[in-house]
Image 1 (cartoon, rainbow, N blue to C red):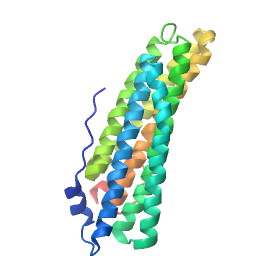
Image 2: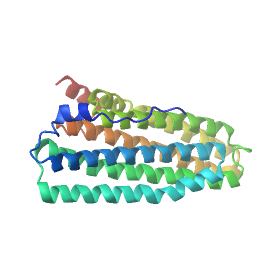
Image 3: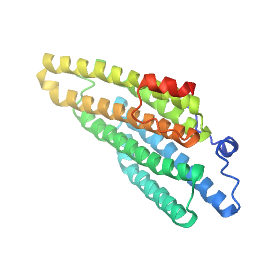
Image 4: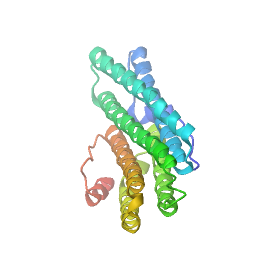
Length: 254
Protein backbone atom coordinates (compact mmCIF):
# COMPACT_ATOMS: atom_id res chain seq x y z
CA UNK A 1 0.00 0.00 0.00
CA UNK A 2 1.38 3.39 -0.99
CA UNK A 3 0.58 6.53 0.95
CA UNK A 4 1.71 10.08 0.51
CA UNK A 5 4.12 11.36 3.13
CA UNK A 6 2.48 13.90 5.39
CA UNK A 7 4.07 17.28 4.90
CA UNK A 8 3.34 20.27 7.04
CA UNK A 9 2.23 23.60 5.61
CA UNK A 10 2.84 26.26 8.27
CA UNK A 11 2.30 29.21 5.97
CA UNK A 12 -1.14 28.11 4.83
CA UNK A 13 -2.15 27.25 8.38
CA UNK A 14 -1.13 30.60 9.87
CA UNK A 15 -2.69 32.50 6.99
CA UNK A 16 -6.10 30.94 7.63
CA UNK A 17 -6.05 31.11 11.42
CA UNK A 18 -3.65 34.01 12.04
CA UNK A 19 -1.72 32.08 14.65
CA UNK A 20 1.42 34.08 13.97
CA UNK A 21 -0.08 37.45 14.97
CA UNK A 22 0.54 37.35 18.70
CA UNK A 23 2.59 39.96 20.50
CA UNK A 24 4.33 37.15 22.37
CA UNK A 25 6.74 35.33 20.11
CA UNK A 26 6.89 32.54 22.67
CA UNK A 27 3.13 32.02 22.33
CA UNK A 28 3.54 31.61 18.56
CA UNK A 29 6.25 29.03 19.15
CA UNK A 30 4.10 27.11 21.65
CA UNK A 31 1.19 26.87 19.22
CA UNK A 32 3.49 25.76 16.41
CA UNK A 33 5.10 23.19 18.69
CA UNK A 34 1.71 21.69 19.55
CA UNK A 35 0.72 21.41 15.91
CA UNK A 36 4.03 19.83 14.95
CA UNK A 37 3.71 17.26 17.73
CA UNK A 38 0.21 16.35 16.56
CA UNK A 39 1.51 15.69 13.05
CA UNK A 40 4.37 13.61 14.47
CA UNK A 41 1.85 11.58 16.44
CA UNK A 42 -0.28 11.23 13.31
CA UNK A 43 2.68 9.88 11.35
CA UNK A 44 3.42 7.34 14.07
CA UNK A 45 -0.19 6.19 14.30
CA UNK A 46 -0.41 5.86 10.54
CA UNK A 47 2.69 3.66 10.61
CA UNK A 48 1.07 1.56 13.34
CA UNK A 49 -2.03 0.99 11.22
CA UNK A 50 -0.04 0.11 8.09
CA UNK A 51 2.30 -2.21 9.96
CA UNK A 52 -0.58 -3.85 11.82
CA UNK A 53 -2.39 -4.49 8.57
CA UNK A 54 0.76 -5.82 6.88
CA UNK A 55 1.48 -8.12 9.82
CA UNK A 56 -2.08 -9.43 9.67
CA UNK A 57 -2.18 -10.08 5.94
CA UNK A 58 1.33 -11.53 5.71
CA UNK A 59 1.27 -13.47 8.98
CA UNK A 60 4.36 -11.51 10.03
CA UNK A 61 4.82 -12.29 13.72
CA UNK A 62 7.90 -10.09 14.12
CA UNK A 63 6.17 -7.02 12.71
CA UNK A 64 3.05 -7.70 14.80
CA UNK A 65 5.16 -7.71 17.97
CA UNK A 66 6.78 -4.41 16.94
CA UNK A 67 3.33 -2.83 16.54
CA UNK A 68 2.30 -3.98 20.00
CA UNK A 69 5.53 -2.77 21.61
CA UNK A 70 5.41 0.64 19.87
CA UNK A 71 2.03 1.47 21.43
CA UNK A 72 3.79 2.81 24.52
CA UNK A 73 5.30 5.55 22.36
CA UNK A 74 1.87 6.53 21.04
CA UNK A 75 0.53 6.75 24.59
CA UNK A 76 3.52 8.82 25.70
CA UNK A 77 2.99 11.30 22.87
CA UNK A 78 -0.66 11.74 23.84
CA UNK A 79 0.32 12.53 27.42
CA UNK A 80 3.04 14.95 26.33
CA UNK A 81 0.77 16.92 23.98
CA UNK A 82 -2.06 16.97 26.50
CA UNK A 83 0.26 18.39 29.17
CA UNK A 84 1.52 21.12 26.83
CA UNK A 85 -2.04 22.10 25.92
CA UNK A 86 -3.02 22.26 29.59
CA UNK A 87 -0.09 24.59 30.33
CA UNK A 88 -0.98 26.83 27.36
CA UNK A 89 -4.56 27.17 28.61
CA UNK A 90 -3.35 27.99 32.12
CA UNK A 91 -0.67 30.48 31.08
CA UNK A 92 -2.08 32.12 27.95
CA UNK A 93 -5.85 31.88 28.41
CA UNK A 94 -6.34 31.54 24.64
CA UNK A 95 -9.46 32.81 22.89
CA UNK A 96 -11.10 32.59 19.47
CA UNK A 97 -9.04 30.61 16.92
CA UNK A 98 -6.29 29.95 19.47
CA UNK A 99 -8.76 28.27 21.80
CA UNK A 100 -10.26 26.28 18.91
CA UNK A 101 -6.79 25.07 18.04
CA UNK A 102 -6.08 23.83 21.56
CA UNK A 103 -9.52 22.22 21.88
CA UNK A 104 -9.21 20.49 18.49
CA UNK A 105 -5.71 19.27 19.36
CA UNK A 106 -6.88 17.73 22.64
CA UNK A 107 -9.75 16.00 20.84
CA UNK A 108 -7.53 14.92 17.93
CA UNK A 109 -4.88 13.24 20.04
CA UNK A 110 -7.59 11.25 21.80
CA UNK A 111 -8.77 9.88 18.46
CA UNK A 112 -5.20 9.28 17.31
CA UNK A 113 -4.47 7.30 20.47
CA UNK A 114 -7.59 5.23 19.90
CA UNK A 115 -6.55 4.57 16.33
CA UNK A 116 -3.30 3.30 17.82
CA UNK A 117 -5.29 1.01 20.12
CA UNK A 118 -7.14 -0.43 17.13
CA UNK A 119 -3.80 -1.04 15.39
CA UNK A 120 -2.75 -3.06 18.46
CA UNK A 121 -5.78 -5.29 17.92
CA UNK A 122 -4.59 -5.95 14.38
CA UNK A 123 -1.18 -6.95 15.70
CA UNK A 124 -2.51 -9.22 18.44
CA UNK A 125 -4.96 -10.98 16.13
CA UNK A 126 -2.26 -11.30 13.47
CA UNK A 127 -0.26 -13.43 15.91
CA UNK A 128 -3.25 -15.62 16.78
CA UNK A 129 -4.33 -16.07 13.17
CA UNK A 130 -0.81 -16.93 12.06
CA UNK A 131 -0.60 -19.63 14.72
CA UNK A 132 -3.99 -20.95 13.66
CA UNK A 133 -2.98 -21.16 9.97
CA UNK A 134 -6.23 -19.42 9.02
CA UNK A 135 -4.96 -18.22 5.64
CA UNK A 136 -3.88 -21.74 4.73
CA UNK A 137 -7.27 -23.18 5.57
CA UNK A 138 -10.49 -21.22 5.03
CA UNK A 139 -9.17 -17.68 5.23
CA UNK A 140 -8.17 -16.79 1.67
CA UNK A 141 -11.36 -15.00 0.59
CA UNK A 142 -12.03 -13.18 3.89
CA UNK A 143 -8.43 -11.93 4.01
CA UNK A 144 -8.69 -10.63 0.45
CA UNK A 145 -11.76 -8.64 1.48
CA UNK A 146 -9.95 -7.49 4.61
CA UNK A 147 -7.01 -6.31 2.51
CA UNK A 148 -9.35 -4.21 0.37
CA UNK A 149 -10.95 -2.61 3.43
CA UNK A 150 -7.56 -2.09 5.07
CA UNK A 151 -6.08 -0.39 2.02
CA UNK A 152 -9.08 1.93 1.83
CA UNK A 153 -8.73 2.81 5.53
CA UNK A 154 -4.99 3.41 5.13
CA UNK A 155 -5.47 5.78 2.19
CA UNK A 156 -8.27 7.63 3.95
CA UNK A 157 -6.23 8.10 7.13
CA UNK A 158 -3.33 9.42 5.06
CA UNK A 159 -5.62 11.89 3.28
CA UNK A 160 -7.09 13.02 6.60
CA UNK A 161 -3.68 13.66 8.15
CA UNK A 162 -2.54 15.62 5.12
CA UNK A 163 -5.77 17.64 5.29
CA UNK A 164 -5.09 18.28 8.97
CA UNK A 165 -1.58 19.53 8.20
CA UNK A 166 -2.82 21.80 5.40
CA UNK A 167 -6.16 22.72 7.01
CA UNK A 168 -7.94 21.60 3.83
CA UNK A 169 -11.63 21.86 4.73
CA UNK A 170 -12.89 20.71 1.31
CA UNK A 171 -10.89 17.49 1.49
CA UNK A 172 -12.08 16.97 5.06
CA UNK A 173 -15.70 17.29 3.88
CA UNK A 174 -15.08 14.76 1.09
CA UNK A 175 -13.69 12.21 3.55
CA UNK A 176 -16.64 12.67 5.90
CA UNK A 177 -19.14 12.19 3.07
CA UNK A 178 -17.54 8.88 2.06
CA UNK A 179 -17.68 7.33 5.52
CA UNK A 180 -20.54 5.06 4.42
CA UNK A 181 -18.16 3.19 2.10
CA UNK A 182 -16.32 1.77 5.11
CA UNK A 183 -19.57 0.65 6.74
CA UNK A 184 -20.66 -1.12 3.56
CA UNK A 185 -17.36 -2.97 3.22
CA UNK A 186 -17.46 -4.00 6.87
CA UNK A 187 -20.98 -5.38 6.41
CA UNK A 188 -19.83 -7.36 3.36
CA UNK A 189 -16.95 -8.93 5.29
CA UNK A 190 -19.24 -9.75 8.21
CA UNK A 191 -21.73 -11.55 5.94
CA UNK A 192 -18.92 -13.49 4.29
CA UNK A 193 -17.49 -14.60 7.62
CA UNK A 194 -20.89 -15.67 8.95
CA UNK A 195 -21.25 -17.87 5.88
CA UNK A 196 -17.77 -19.32 6.47
CA UNK A 197 -18.63 -20.14 10.07
CA UNK A 198 -21.82 -21.90 9.03
CA UNK A 199 -19.97 -23.93 6.39
CA UNK A 200 -17.07 -24.89 8.66
CA UNK A 201 -17.74 -24.63 12.42
CA UNK A 202 -14.12 -25.61 13.13
CA UNK A 203 -13.04 -22.18 11.85
CA UNK A 204 -15.43 -20.18 14.02
CA UNK A 205 -12.71 -18.95 16.37
CA UNK A 206 -10.45 -17.75 13.56
CA UNK A 207 -13.36 -16.26 11.64
CA UNK A 208 -14.32 -14.27 14.73
CA UNK A 209 -10.77 -12.97 14.95
CA UNK A 210 -10.98 -11.74 11.36
CA UNK A 211 -14.31 -10.12 12.24
CA UNK A 212 -12.64 -8.31 15.15
CA UNK A 213 -9.92 -7.09 12.78
CA UNK A 214 -12.54 -5.79 10.36
CA UNK A 215 -14.28 -4.07 13.26
CA UNK A 216 -10.96 -2.49 14.29
CA UNK A 217 -10.51 -1.14 10.77
CA UNK A 218 -14.08 0.18 10.78
CA UNK A 219 -13.40 1.95 14.07
CA UNK A 220 -10.22 3.48 12.62
CA UNK A 221 -12.44 4.84 9.86
CA UNK A 222 -14.74 6.40 12.46
CA UNK A 223 -11.85 8.05 14.29
CA UNK A 224 -10.51 9.32 10.96
CA UNK A 225 -13.86 10.94 10.28
CA UNK A 226 -13.66 12.59 13.71
CA UNK A 227 -10.28 14.09 12.77
CA UNK A 228 -11.87 15.63 9.69
CA UNK A 229 -14.68 17.08 11.77
CA UNK A 230 -12.09 18.79 13.96
CA UNK A 231 -10.54 20.36 10.87
CA UNK A 232 -13.89 21.94 9.99
CA UNK A 233 -14.34 23.11 13.58
CA UNK A 234 -10.86 24.58 13.74
CA UNK A 235 -10.97 26.47 10.43
CA UNK A 236 -14.67 27.33 10.11
CA UNK A 237 -15.72 27.38 13.76
CA UNK A 238 -18.59 24.98 12.97
CA UNK A 239 -19.31 21.86 15.00
CA UNK A 240 -20.58 19.29 12.49
CA UNK A 241 -20.59 16.26 14.76
CA UNK A 242 -23.80 14.21 14.58
CA UNK A 243 -24.64 15.92 11.29
CA UNK A 244 -26.41 14.01 8.50
CA UNK A 245 -25.08 13.97 4.94
CA UNK A 246 -27.98 16.19 3.85
CA UNK A 247 -27.19 18.71 6.59
CA UNK A 248 -23.50 18.46 5.75
CA UNK A 249 -24.13 19.42 2.12
CA UNK A 250 -26.17 22.39 3.29
CA UNK A 251 -23.27 23.40 5.53
CA UNK A 252 -20.88 23.26 2.58
CA UNK A 253 -23.06 25.69 0.64
CA UNK A 254 -23.12 28.25 3.47
